[in-house]
Image (cartoon, rainbow, N blue to C red):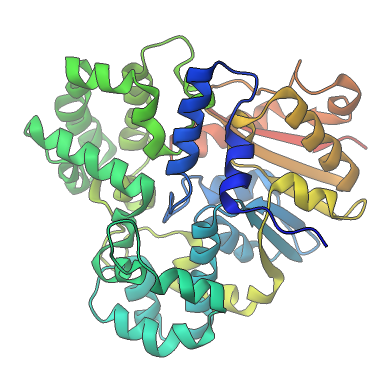
Length: 407
């Protein structure tokens, strides 16, 4: 029986471009090294936009990349038949299993909110020890009770702010430090009560930062965006021929100005480094008090696997899924990898299947890269894709794309 490949090999295999120059491969390897630990304590794709485009129903069998597991758990509110979550990152698998254990065992909403939503209270150490640890598998418990690179026990992140941890949490923290060098408090915008006020704060306080020489130089370095989970292969696509500072300014403008703050928990994470504390503060669907009972009731429908998306498809029977969520993983892929992936998606797709993915750039990346005999079996839903892009409150990506299997 073959041995499972180490997580480091899986991640390097997905990220490192073998056909690239030595310098590019070294940068890819640096990203792969950074990506081995916790990257996203919260996923940065909007599950509400996803569910509207995917039209998940009681017969849906979903295959998705886990990341922070927020979206997979939120999809349970749409009542699918089954969800399979995959991820190459062992930290993300451990995080997903911990969140599942919390939803299942923290039956008092105050405990669940304290542990996952606020995630920075000293009593969370006791909640973990008494109510969660006994229900975790050995690998997950070993991860959370182990120590990170600076010697901190990982579970203590839930007593000091888990959303400030991980690659993305540290990136947002560094952005806050940089803003404060220019005498700007990012949390100032969270006091805005209207879209007009949000726009004023952005135009007066945030927009000028992107004209600063230091900011423009920093953002021109591909490694500077590792904290956003953007590998070197994705950097040029995100830039789209523009200076990266201008691209990031436009994405931050959408996050800050296009959605009311009382309905955008992504803005709270970006500007406040955590969810809001008020009872009515926005939360992901799976954490909203009115949804928790049904999410808990449907947890058995969710399976978490440490594997690649393509690997799981290869292990699956024909016509075994009908909803596929790829996040932005295809931005990392070569033409050969895309072809292999879409061959397997097409083989495993049931009638009416829908595939949703994001791209750093605005256009879909499939035409000309996936063979026409495969892609011609799918219908690109341009109008629905545009609506999903406009409705994605996370605002990081250039495009959200929907493909539907033709009859």
